[in-house]
Image (cartoon, rainbow over all chains, first blue to last red; front, side, top):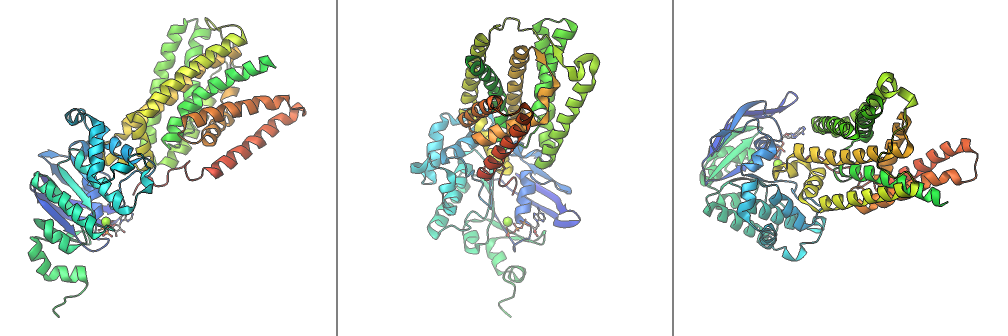
Length: 242
Length: 286
Ligand SMILES: Nc1ncnc2c1ncn2[C@@H]1O[C@H](COP(=O)(O)OP(=O)(O)OP(=O)(O)O)[C@@H](O)[C@H]1O
Ligand SMILES: [Mg+2]
């Protein structure tokens, strides 16, 4: 489904990502963890096409998307949830969803049918149907998250890049988000998810990739990763057994 | 007095057509574009040079004008995507200076600073009253068209892009397409003004295209509220009335120019100050 080979990215002569390679099978849910500044968001930005890799290649659904522009990648079904909220604060909630649906490729739009109805359903998923006409700047952080996730779900995506979807979200909403991701899994969708919440990762992911200073240091099942010594060192700062 | 009001009505309608188009680029799109007069000059000279200097019929002039305008529009929207926003802002000013230098110095075609006299009105009314009615009608049609556009999906795409490029693109919004449409709308305003303004004056002169005119457009958009159709329409009308009306205040004619500049400087300063949160994009990228 997604094949990343030898991906490197640097700003000036400072490397941010070094020789990152991994592949993701259709229907997998993969956790991406690592300390602050390890390059997780940068990896997503390269995958979305916002930053140009210095070397390496990205293959998605058997086609080479390494040099494709961001909106074309979006049209191919790569959806993104941003760490800093991808919500347009100056627009109403309704418009926030509308703009995403209208930007879909023509055939997908046709399949959706009545866009107004889909907008309503999307707001219902986020539990925000009563604030449709309100400006998004009136939402709390958690509500923006839910709206953004709901919007990505409803936009016919196949690969989801979720950047810390549970950051700053209450435990109840975190469960709601976990449920949404489980539903995606059931529907055979592929999810890459950046998280600092290890129990959350353990609960929903099939595999965990650990990133440290731009390198992949581990890629294993959640159980094995949790017990590994490397993770203790780079993530918690010390080996608790010593 | 009636003649003055009709005159102002003509000028404000024509100016509003330009500022309302420009509002989609600079106001709603928050694209730092100060080259609106590049489009107007290309449209005006493309239209009237073939007609007056080479004896071509109006239709031929119109085709030439639209073709040139199309090329310039695509060039501007392409540049606006290639450059960083501030870089494009500076470049658009440079382009304006280049085009006006060409207009001023290509004497054999544009007649330079003298301008082109005897621009024919053709089928347009010869009385100011009739002319005012035509201009208001054209403005009404343009406003209706832009009002429809403003309600549509293009306008939402543009707003989304202006608020955050990356977020909009991640949803599948094509920046190239949206910029091209926004600049085309702005060019539409320029084309209307070329068709209506020069025949009204009977003269096409470079002195109408100096940079203070561009600043006047910026002022109309900022004072009316960037992106707000009715606001920009109201502001343009009011400011044109003010600009033209100042001539009737009993001060020595040699003071009128400086007084206008001071007044408009103050208005621009105050409106930018009041709208400092909405004029320029808050975050362009992550
Ligand atoms: N535009 C930029 N200019 C300079 N350095 C940058 C830029 N963007 C990212 N970096 C650097 O790249 C490194 C990786 O940043 P990134 O945002 O990918 O980290 P992250 O793993 O997502 O961290 P966090 O867990 O805090 O979100 C950091 O050291 C950061 O300082
Ligand atoms: Mg990050």
